[in-house]
Amino acid sequence: MLEWFAEYGMFLSKTLTFVIAIVLIIAVAAAAGQRRSKGHKGHIEIDSLNDEFEQLQDELQSVVLDEDEYKSRKKEEKKREKAEKKQKGEQKDLPRSYVLEFDGDIKASAVENLRKEIDAVLSVAEEGDDIILKLESSGGMVHSYGLAASQLHRIKENNIPLTICVDKVAASGGYMMACVADKVYAAPFALLGSIGVIAQLPNFNKLLRKNDIDFEMITAGEYKRTLTMFGENTDGARKKFKQEIDETHDLFKQFVTEQRPQLNIDSVATGEVWFGKQALENHLVDEISTSDSVIYKAMQNRDVYSVAYKEKHGLMEKLGLQAEASIERALTKFISRNSQRQPF
Image 1: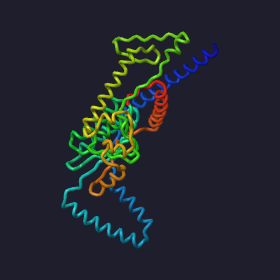
Image 2 (image 1 turned 60 degrees about the vertical axis):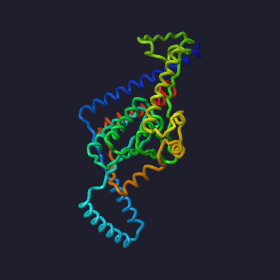
Image 3 (image 1 turned 180 degrees about the horizontal axis):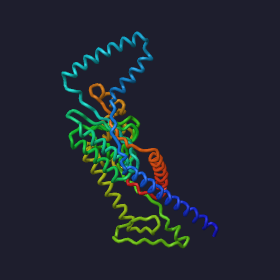
């Protein structure tokens, strides 16, 4: 009997912890949302990467060169800048590259900022301009990453070349975004692929029955609920659930094939991931390079700007958002180990 109480107490404590965390997230999110609705709007930050690089170069030269050589180089640079300015006045401005960043979590939360950044760039982009996206994501929810990929499609619909650089990982939903690009670069040891679908959840039905605890669930619609955490799962429910997973996988494969027809989709849509060089052999990417190299190369004959949407937050809102993020990370770990259905 004592063993039963111990097991039940452990189960109840985990469940209560989960419920309390959910309530806290809802409360914090509601408070943050209410504060944002009172007029806390964000803004677009634009920085010239050409200027930043020249500043770094100048700082380094001022240290490593002797004073006379440094002054001599500065004079030469001023002459060159004056000549370039004069030539620039006679010629058309250099084409521009706009650098965006997407750091994806399980919900692709950064998609809202990405949307606004794309809005801003599309409003000023001219013929000859392009967009470089630094992408990092190991995937997440299907619908969230589907929306993120759709945002990137807007760039192509406006006939603006899109380059995506992957320095660390673009897997599953992350690769769904990457494959939209006209050109995909990957660092040698970046991870790409995982064109597959996964869903997992525990089932406590045997534990409940063992302890004479009933669980009831009422649904309308044959497939309103298939597999559950607490009910008794049937072979029919498992079959339907597997069918849904297969259908999602087929849609994923179809999308990737449309974006990169050069792929042998059957050989890469196995759920595996590949390092950069292996991904190149499998035509998942086009070249091996880091984002730094791609951007530096662009700066040789283009004006390169970083574009980022930043939201304004007060002190209390920042604390609330940090608490929300901490709770969400803890929940993600709990759910992934216990009950989460994570299609990507």
